[in-house]
Image (cartoon, rainbow, N blue to C red):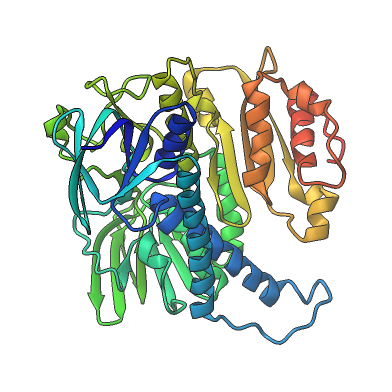
Length: 466
C-alpha cells in the first residue's frame, strides 16, 4: 500500500496548486483525479475554454463591426464553428498538459480514478486500470462544483444545455434563451451574441450580476442592450419544454404577467453546486450541510482534523483564484506556518466586453453596514486611450472611507477590467487611501488613468479630465 503525507482529491486550480505547494514544502504528495486530464472544471469546461471562445467571438465581432471604422476593408467575415471549437480545444489541451508537467516536475504522484474514503486515513482509488487503496496522513478535498439546475427542467444536453455543452456547439444558435443573468450566462450569451445569435436573458432578480455593485450592473446591461442582448428581469421561469429543435421557456414577471419565449437552444445557468458524489464522506466521519458543502473552520479544516476542504466544495465565492489561495493556505498551515487569506480582497470578474471586475465592498454593502463613505467615478469615454481603441463604454468607481479616505471598494466596467482590478487589490492589501492612488503616476495613454481620475474624484471631487 502506497503511503503519503498528503493526498488531494480533485485536480482543479485549488487541488493542483495545493499539491504543488505541499510538494514544495517537502511532503510526499498524491493527487487523485477521476478524469483522464488534469485541471478540473476551470481548465477543461470552465474558465479557460470560455475565455478562448470569448476572445474568438470578440475578434469576429470586431471584424464584422469595427474594422471598417479603422480603415480596414475586408469581405464579410464568416464563422467556422468547427475551427473555433477546435482552437478552444487546443488551448484547453495545452493548459492541461502544462499542469501534468508541473506534477512531474514536483514529483507528485497522479492517481487516475474516483477517490472515495474507506476511513479517515485510507482512500480507495478506482480507475480504468483497476483499484488501489492508499494511506494518507492528511487529505484535502478539492472536488469542485457542477452546473446547477431548477428541479422542473430536464437537461437533455442537446437543446436544453448547461455551460459544459455551450462550449461545444456545432452551430451558432438562431435564438439562445439564457436562464440566469449571472457571470456564466452573460459570458456564454455574449459569445453567441457576437457570432450572430439572438440572445435573451431571463433573470429572477431585478438586475443582472446581482452580487456586484449595482452601478456596474446598470452599466453592463446598458452596453449589452446596445450590442443586441435582450433582458427579462424579475422574471421566474416556470417551465422549459422541448419540441424537436425548438425550446419553449415559460415564465412570469413581477406583475404575474405570463411570458413565453421560443428559441432553438436554452442555456440553463442558475449557478453551480458543490460536488461530493462518490467521496463516501460518511466513512471518514464527515457529512455535507444543507447547501451540499463540506463545512470547515478558519483553517479550511473539517471536523475530522486531518481532512481539509477547499474551493467550490466549501463556503464562499466559487472562484478559481479563491480555490488557489485556499490550496496554498492549507499546504502552509499543514507545515506549521501562519498563512492568511483576506476574502474581502478576492477579486470578482465578468469576462464580457466590456469586462466587469470588482474587489472589496459594494455601495449597497456599505449602506447596509452603516459605514460612512464617499465615492468617485470616471467614465472611459473621457480617456484618449479608450477613444483610440474604440472602447469607450464603462466607468471606474472607487469607494473610500469618509473620514480616513481608505479605499473600501473598487469597481470597474470597461476594457481590460479583469487586469486593471489588480491595482485595487494591491492598494487595498496595503490599506491605501484614494489620495495615494490619485498621487501615483499612471502612464499616458492607458486605461488605468481612469483609476487615477476616479481616485481624484473620491478624494476631493477633482478629476482632471472631466
